[in-house]
Image 1 (tube, rainbow, N blue to C red):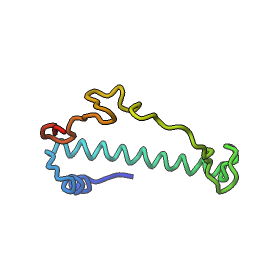
Image 2 (tube, rainbow, N blue to C red; image 1 turned 60 degrees about the horizontal axis):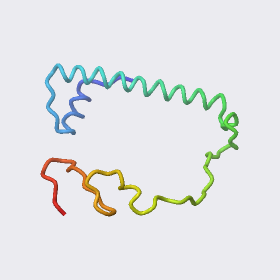
Image 3 (cartoon, rainbow, N blue to C red; image 1 turned 180 degrees about the vertical axis):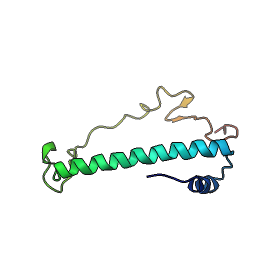
Image 4 (tube, rainbow, N blue to C red; image 1 turned 135 degrees about the vertical axis):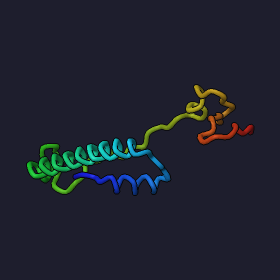
Length: 106
């Protein structure tokens, strides 16, 4: 599968990007390589399913998905998740702002 430069330009517009011509060429080449690899993976998956359509080699019954046993396990004790966190106060801890701005005191 290939991707055209027009497709890449369209995706760039949707992402509010304005790449220069050299970047568009590189992106077209890179995205084309990614799409080819994904198509290769899909072909490999289809070939494997054709060899063992029911998943019997993995010990699965036809049409089933392997599930783990649903067992209740103890969770973290209060404060355990935050004991190594910097800036922890009780069961709370500070994190830096993800997008710009100053950290809010609280």
